[in-house]
Length: 373
Image 1: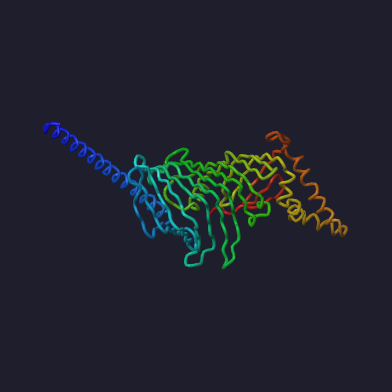
Image 2: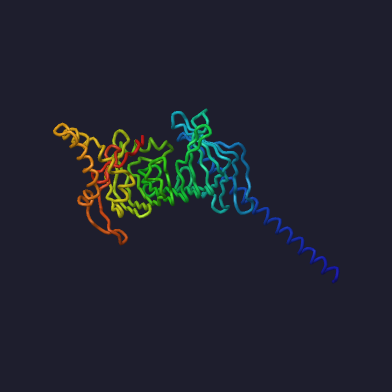
């Protein structure tokens, strides 16, 4: 090769190296710019949460993910929920927050187990573990669009000294929330969807000891805005505005028991639920047996009063009335309800009523819900 050809070849290599350097330099500038946007978004979400009384902190924080992702690692992570009295302190091993370089307003987080919950200054009272814990947040702090939480292999335990009692276990759990109507500053309507697979909660109720699959979709109507605030304050706002909680879809399965329903609920001045869902149940007899409905009815105030009156007429007659009331329970509900089919099975449609937080399936009291504020 001539000297001239060698010089031309050398210049081409130099130009190629310069172009590669410019490409990497330009990409690095883009990455750092996107990383800055992602960090601003994370800081904005933390500030928004702090306004609502939820303060998040990191033991140490690091930035990575180059060249295609932005990753912020927080180890260990903690949060203080000041809306509770006393305040709740939540701690876990660490959180990884990631965003794609071309989409810095979509934050994907992965949580490391375990997580502990304690009253401020006290030993942990709850502990949670999981095989996979992840969340996603789409939008900006001033205009949130969608939030999702997903857990696989979730287990929640109550702690008391060295004792550990299983409160909740679920093979898979998902919770999604999105802005369905309105805007952050003008009458937002929030859609929330909960899905659980093989969930058990034996300490909550004996009927919850067997695995339950559930899918529930609800719409929250009556909010003035979606400014940062505790959820108790949001529910007060819904009550004051005459808003409601629309259960647009609910489906639960436990073994041979299957139930679907929909309806609307409101909040009274005490923060308790009022309203009614129309529920269709297949396997009603097994459901009533699981919740101990016969015993509940036999010990209800109305039956107590009737039994007392009958015992005054003839000792022992009240007890007979109690037994008869429980024995005829399933037949009575079937007679009062609408006979139908559900997925090819014989079923009955009955009202599920909420009255000042108390829950009734037809005429049968089956439990109570806590006040929401």
